[in-house]
Image (tube, rainbow, N blue to C red):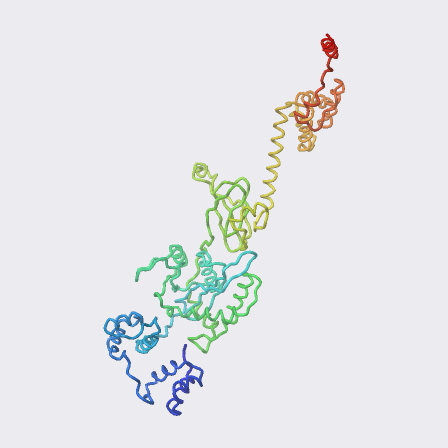
Length: 532
């Protein structure tokens, strides 16, 4: 902590003018006595009072100073071990030997203050770029990091600010495009910190840039240039701009969502931030200097660079794809397939490319990329995969659906049930096919007719149904009610009882089998035999 100048002046005055002791000064000014001694030692004034008592370390001070000159960051513990090997008998720093540690701190050489040149850049020559973390946003069940992309022109100090939900490469490049578009041009050089989005690997002067960033820089014809390691002063303009954003824009600001935040950021950049004084030209504002600098920027290319997030996704048994914590529907015809998601900040598109096995079709012009679904992008999140059982029971989960996808799957399942029932009827009673054709010609509900014929098949059997359907068609009525009337006439002609709607189990039916009465003459014979 830096000691205030007025406290240092009071310490020196009370010690040398008023002749207060160190403990008295520390008690009255509410500082530690070691702080008082440090201020007095740094002042270089003669010490008042009796000379200090001799210490065991005095004999080893030349060795300690020589060692610290060569190794200024050597720890007090290691120095203690070295002087102990040379005869020192003082206590260890970890055993209450704080006096030894304090003496080492007093004699340790201080790092010399480094002087910096004030750098000036030409108009349109340079801009500086960096990310800044501004906490988190709560969106439904999701807690998203709020990242600010900041780019500042080094000459005019014009600021571009845009917020994103993460610091992915796609958003990093979207921030560049937004700045270039807002300024109407591109600086010749962009300075980067050693971000993973810019520098993948660095060994001394050998730098391996991110290939995506290199392609982007080539498209916009600027030079990407990283600053030296641990030399944040080289991009001090963007660092100060970020601090200015925190204090003058973001502090105590209320927003509804990220779009509202970016709208307010754009107004602030073009208003308050542009009306401040330019540091290099105090007589002019940033806005006025930027007007002159804008003419020096490189022209924008005719076609902007594509900035879509592109990932391959696997569709399971259900017609959903997982992207960025959410599930989006696709047509049910593409389950168990690998599709491609193309996403920007507001929309995602799910596309299907013709596979390589269809190369002959592609050569004939039948291939290409087919857009299967478009959805608004959601920054909420569904339940995690470990809660899949809860999701199957419908216990929450954000799913972005198109009703047409779900309805098409439901219709297909319903039609499949109808087809299975129809096949069963046609196999049991072939005349059913003619009845369904006649009913379809009249526009009747085939689903209800199929269900009615199934019930008649279960109650009367296949043979009776096959015989009754032609009678109904002969009357010109292709309907289950006409078939049921024909079945009932045939039953009454045979004098049979009405069939039960519910078939009883076999062991119950066995109890209802009629038994013939027993001949009583056998009992008479048994009686006669007993009398003999």
